[in-house]
Image (cartoon, rainbow, N blue to C red; front, side, top):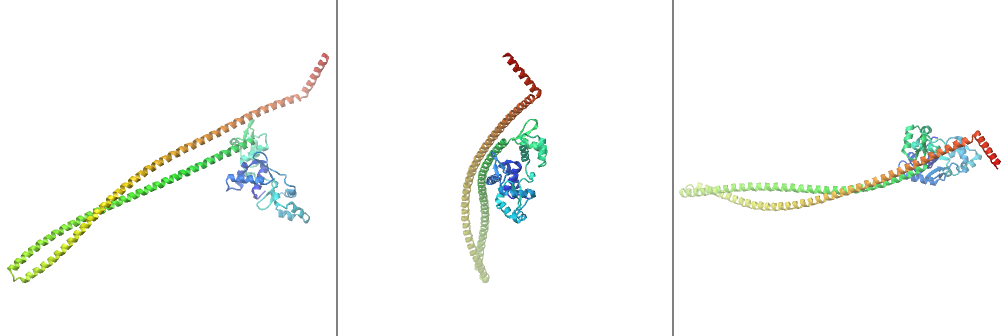
Length: 468
């Protein structure tokens, strides 16, 4: 039958028709392979459970097992007969058009409510609105090899060999004996009897699924706990990294302070060298002024001697006076420049004292800041060591819990294997006794043995009569 199934209800109908009975956990992987791919396994199982409980065509057939009711409703029998006759999907509109004017009312009453077809286990709806029968060809290629092996063993409760199982499964899906034997060896609910015969134990399957769910739930809780601890460790690590960043920024500030200190020291040396140059210039200027004074005194003495000696040289004397006047003006200018140089020297000395005081203050601040940073670094290192020790202890505790859970699971599996082994031994003893009983019955049913028993009973009765 071509076409995609319309809803989850139709997928469950086809699945339960092919497998007779299944649990919700067994149906979930197949349903998730066909539809609901984006949902997790827990939500898929929840939707399957709600769908099974919602429609009355699904019947609970034991602990955790579901079956499909193929009897259906009487109102839909005529539509079932039409589909069975046509052997192809039909829509309700086609059925209404195909019926005559006399049968139209009858057919309308037959399919008056489409909800009745949805809840009827005999019908499935396709995505294009057409209706088909559940008993039509099932696409077995969608099912896993494990489910097909379970189907084969359910249809043959006495058991099958690997070769027989391969022939039966090959009619549904191509496979080989190695894959089938690998699947049966993998799961404990496939039991191997004598002479290579395999059987299926539904109770063990239910117990195995329950134990697997409990183990997965425990592992999920463990994973959530691990993730929570991981988030805590990550938050602690981010806090420590933030603190290290603050320390690095403090180190950078300290380095900038040291660079500023070096720059101030360079400026101080530059100022000292400039002051030394100024002192050298002042000393040279003083020497020049002294030479000027000596020269002036010599000129004055010479002018006086010339004036006393030769008044005729008036013009020369006037020129000499004029020159003296110019020299005096230059002397005054030199004296004023010397005074300004002295005031600048005082200002430079005051700036030098201020720079020295500021340098001492920077040294004190730097020493205090370095001491504070060293104490903070020591405290942070101690905190980091404590957190690492706590994380190691917590990880050790969690590993011990995982080992304990694994040991408990191993003990449970070993106990179950021992129980299955005892059960197989008991079944083998029962089969032997049944075979012995059949052999004795076959011997007793032999006509010669029956005749001998009658003759013996007759002679035995005659002897008893004669004796009496």
